[in-house]
Length: 444
Image 1 (spheres, helix red, strand yellow):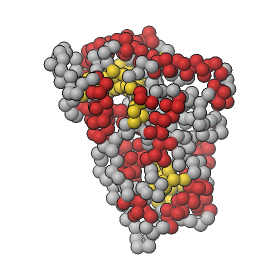
Image 2: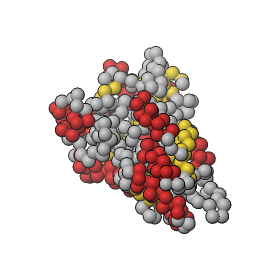
Image 3: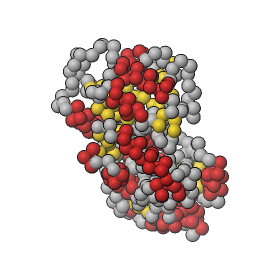
Image 4: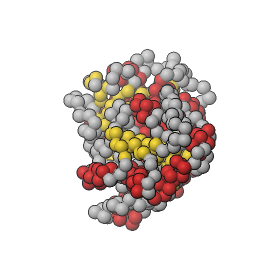
């Protein structure tokens, strides 16, 4: 007799291969459950040729030897329709996993790579399972990589429509955008509950058409880690070191931060900006733009970093700058900064503005406005008390255990139970056994 709920987690990559916030949180949530006694979790990260080559004989690969994490190669994917093209290969493999593991909960953390058709497959193969989908971004709403930012001018988009979307993707006809929306909403109708990590994103999806009572807000949590002490400064010294942490791409706003640093230097204000992140997978055009911007500004570019390096790197900065030019949902870097008691200077939109209280534990500036960011950075440096005042008001970020506890309550409510279920299962049907039983799994 099993007393644990079985939960299958599906994300669009694995944090060991692509350390994005969605992948990190989804895997952390699964691991948090496996460390307890109430949920048995199996994590599946979908990958393509960018990070892993397919193995002969199977689409599955194990990650390490823990027995509760898998990779599923899903390289044939239609990004516009969020559809998996290679159903002939994916359906049998995923069906075998579902019938072996027999999950009570299937929790999608993205439909990228796996395809929205997987929702219908789960409903057919394990009809008793409850299906959840956490909406970590706007991919369903926006066919322009889910950014809700116009192309090529990178302006904020406030509402998707066939006419507006065609201005970004002029090679497509308007009916394609209508068909895309109908396709996604039809498959989303099979989801039992949607989860949003921010109230801002939740409201966006309600406006898009998801019923208000079908989407709940559960904020993300982070795993425990050592806390970096404040950077020591001499008497009369200035809190003038700013740090950018994240992927260097057109949407994270690194160009805005670089221009702000250049403006400060032009005004004779001594400030230091450290860029921590890589421009992997970006276009040659953007990389050239980035290199030219860095060359003309007082900026130190350190390249990519591992998550475990964050405490050491943030120890050398006073402020964390989050200058994203899109409607961020729940940036992990803000939680990380708050863990280390670093006030955050962020764009005044989306989940950023929701997480950072202007004048309380951080500062806001006008999104995309390098001049306003420079003004805000100068204000932060000039005040002798502001850094201490903001730091004092920073609350400890939610832990992954807090998030797991709230998710468990939701799982139980959906399953209609007050206590963990007790029903007969084959003794082999555990996460580890499911990994072993899926035919021809290759050990990475």
